[in-house]
Length: 87
Length: 225
Picture 1 (spheres, rainbow over the protein chains, first blue to last red):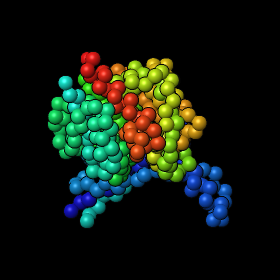
Picture 2 (cartoon, chains in turn blue, orange):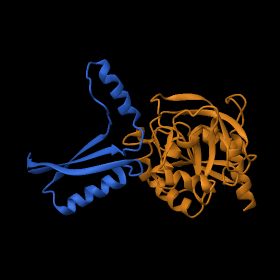
Picture 3 (spheres, rainbow over the protein chains, first blue to last red):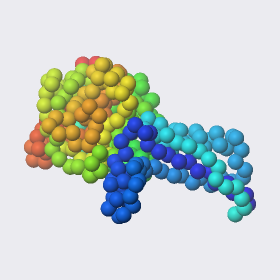
Picture 4 (cartoon, rainbow over the protein chains, first blue to last red):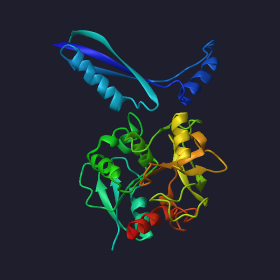
């Protein structure tokens, strides 16, 4: 059965404070990982679809991302097809 | 005439009982509403209580916003039904776009629980008319994601239209922009508030009884309507 995976990445907008990312960034030098000047933490959704990912399917996913998976008041999102294959 | 105030219980609501008790102490009849039921039972107002609806998965309030009861709440709030969202209820109102902005992770990353001093900035909304202008109150506050954020234009608009209804005094507990603790919609019937007035309605169980006017305000408005 053909399976496609679509990835929706959600990130806080650049102007929104990301205290989680900052906490991670502060911990990195303590652990010996130097030279990392900024960390922002986001969410990744992996959606598996039946059948081919056509433009209609992608449009539905963008709608889901816009209305539900991301809060566009504070977050940006991207949608991309990661893999199409057999399962 | 008995005023009936609905209090919605979502899976994960914690403060629905306290909200119903506050409604009763204020002199109205509390009506328990269930998240799966679209029927608001012809209540005169609705409280969305605090807690962690749907486990706060995805984002606080994001899943509850699509519950059957919220279809009716959103529709009737847009038609003028008074709705008060407290803490998680405030998050649900923002996710529903009944109020602008969003609530984000506290800037210090800690869950905070304290008695919080506030100043009531607007006494013309459905839920604040029983306060004196500029009145300072102390009510409990408890949240992990209580930082109110919005873009500068929205913040300026809220200030200009007097829609900041309460502001944090002495200490900003969560990094909220411009010390905003609560806001209203343009019509003043929908109010969201991060601190918990329903926990400050009796001397035995609260630090003060200064939360009670949130619940008595609605009575006066509806009786006079």
